Image 1: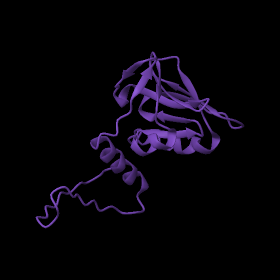
Image 2: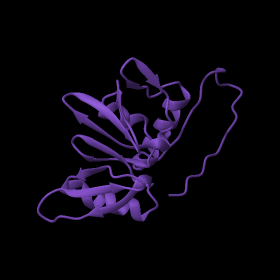
Image 3: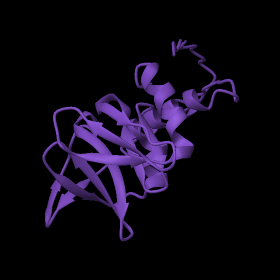
Image 4: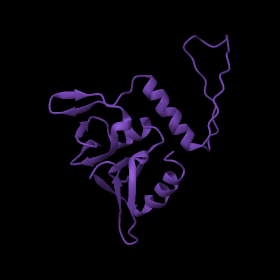
Length: 152
């Protein structure tokens, strides 16, 4: 997807105001803009292991999943807890992340392969690791389309 951003200066606006005009039918662009604004406003994702807090780049995260009401971020070598819920992550993550089941959001740029299963969930494997997760049937087609479009 190609996005054009135009800055129009308006001296009549209060100093801290920003107006963004967008076609309401373009939900992917709206999600990406929300993610940019949330990250710029300091809505960071904090990752935890025990008492230690980590601040990782999103490019390190393979996927997020939920287990026993706790959300975990999976990297190549580790698993971290996060205080965000999946629906909150969907609002702040860039378009390269996509929900693929009720309990999982994947980084589509990190997917190495998908083993398709017509009768149940499909298996997703990530490049450079043995980690894997599952894609619900209802999300499979959308995920493949996204990956075929470069993960965006």
